[in-house]
Amino acid sequence: MQHRIIVLGAGYAGVVAAGRLAKRLHREDAAITLVNAEPDFVERVRMHQLAAGQDLPPRPLGEMFTDPGVELKIAKVTGVDVDRRTVTVTAPGTDDAEELAYDTLVYALGSGWNSQGVPGTAEHAHDVAGRPGALRLRERLARLGAGGTVVVVGGGLTGLEAVTEIAEARPDLDVALAVRGGLGDWLSPKGRRHLRKVVDGLGITVHEEAAVTAVAADHVMTADGRSLPAEVTVWTTGFAAHPIARATTLDVTDTGQIVVDETMRSVSHPDVYAVGDAGMAMGPGEKPLRMSCATGGPMAWQAADAIAARLTGGKLPNIPLRYFNQCISLGRKDGLIQYVTADDRTVGAALTGRLAATYKELVCKGAAWSVTKPTLGLPSRRRRVLREQPRTDAPTQVPA
Image 1 (cartoon, one colour):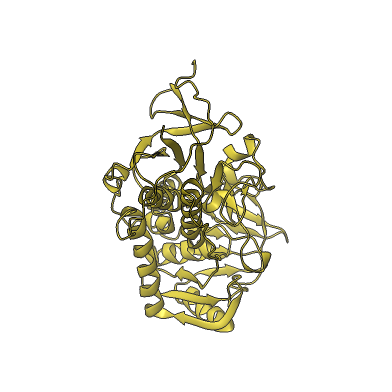
Image 2 (cartoon, one colour):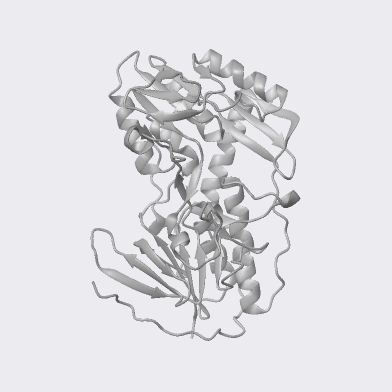
């Protein structure tokens, strides 16, 4: 019998994990199924570009996975039972539920926007955490006339990329940024100086020490009582893990991330691995890895190699996950590459300007290439599965 591996989610981490597993295990021994709700791969690191009016090329998953070693299933994940080792999915446009049984599960459902519980965000704010949100924001900005007010809330990497992209694409708008602390206060002095220069050059108004406590249809309120005009509010204050894991018996954090060991294996259920934003893994200095594309890929490599090693009797991977830099696009013509320590603390060195923009673009293209060619370039080291774990086959259909 084949060892059944199901990968949930075809974002950066899920696609890399599925492709790498296909290169590590013999097809006769392992059946790999990749489940995703949409038929296309989404370049999440470019959602601010999509929102600002730029068109992104489609990347159909069916064209990416022509290797018969991975079966692609377009369906929405509606439930996971880690005790019965089953996943419940529904096909697009239907309410018909199907139950898939697995021997090993790779959970890569990622994350969405996080309202932080602030009143009015769900009703009035926009997000760039995924394609649907970015498209809604794109349509809203297109209807906004000259002089319209836009406030981007959140001064992290996503907020900086969104506000500069919008301001560059729509210089006729009154664009502002509201940050809880100081502008780029985690950056090196060189990084902060360059960031300030860019936002000033784009005419962006920066509201510092402005924690937003409420969002309305035409303004946002801050903790110190300020009312900032905002016909469009863009909320970029972090991400929230997909909620399905929290509904299982998996050991999860307060944020809903699955707690994993150094091989990305669940600490409570050894047949479950979590990669990307779905997993809570510790990095250098015993600090949790942040939700980012920069960690999603390496987590997927680690998980795939660990799964293959455990199934074939090979050596477990022992490659520490670390950071090198933070890449920030500041519109299409400028950028900031902030170099960091292994545990993500900034150092004095930073790359700025057009060279940094080119660097960031190469990083984005490299990330897209690595997932659109998930089995290309990786040496084929397929090994035979030594033995199967005991399993109980589950029904394939769930009564409606």
